[in-house]
Image 1 (cartoon, helix red, strand yellow):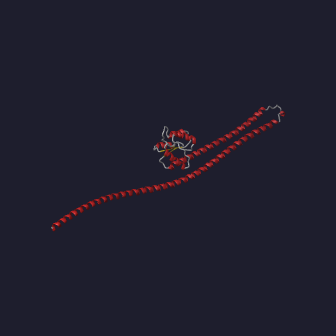
Image 2 (tube, helix red, strand yellow):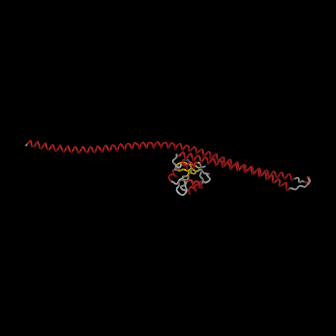
Image 3 (cartoon, one colour):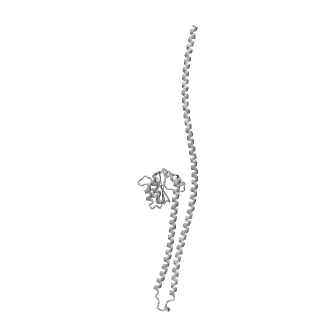
Length: 298
């Protein structure tokens, strides 16, 4: 949830590079719709939003039961607010000025905690089904005894032992056997069904664990590659800064040379003027000498 389009796109690209699918919401209303549509494992929520609701109010609106982890990702410098948010269950606070690894670690931690809670919930449900199976078995036994007692109470015997029907005991045995077989059969079917579900869930859990390990391996590799690329970028930035420094020095030297050139040009102009002056004076002296020589000749 980020109302700044540029920041939202940059964060989405970053999350997808880490291996996460990341739909974006730009408004509070859009965030509510996206949440109910995609059922995300985790929400990254900006606090300062344009509109009536801020990020904290939007988070409470989409998930008031605190079941979904929400990371408040904000540039706010309010330390008291960040500390209070971190103390809420399934909530965390990460500053936008933090390193990428801080955000990534928070995401991985809360997704792992949610996965553990989901697994415990699944195991609790399976335990409840097993208790229900035991209850059904006990009820079956009670029903069997109830049926036998009803049958016995509904059979009237003469006072003499010799007149007692011979097939009554056999009928009682058959009823008991039939009810017992039915009860045990039902119990076995439910137990087999429960074990089948448990086996499937366990297999699914193993598959998820395997996929998570693969993702973790891929994340580690991508992180190392990113770290290596980041180091290269830092080195290139250093070279660029060094080159800029050299260019600045060259510019200073060029400006100094231009200043010297200007001074030399000014001195050259002064020298030309002085030369003209001297030349004119020499011409004047020469004229005077010629006149003097003419006078002498006369």
